[in-house]
Image (cartoon, rainbow, N blue to C red; front, side):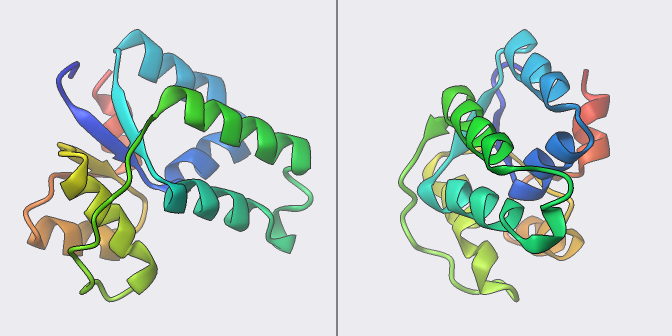
Length: 135
């Protein structure tokens, strides 16, 4: 698993944060020396989703800032080239572009539609459960 290059969709980071298991994700990344890619769009998506009113009772501004800092420390920053613009949810195009530009080997997401479309584009995809079963 050490040679794999992962992209963790924002819903994966948020799931770990909301379930108060972010340290488990950190441990997985560090213990297995995972290469995880990120981009400006992914950081912005994390911050904007967590700033939604429905998350106010679960996270505060400090939690969001700490996650963003941790995310940037654990991930390699990539500026994706925009080549794919065909996903049914245009907001997800950047993830495929990050995958392609960063030469990722696995996209982990909880979004079934994204996983289906990414697989059709020959991206290797994985659910959160599959990701956790790797270790």
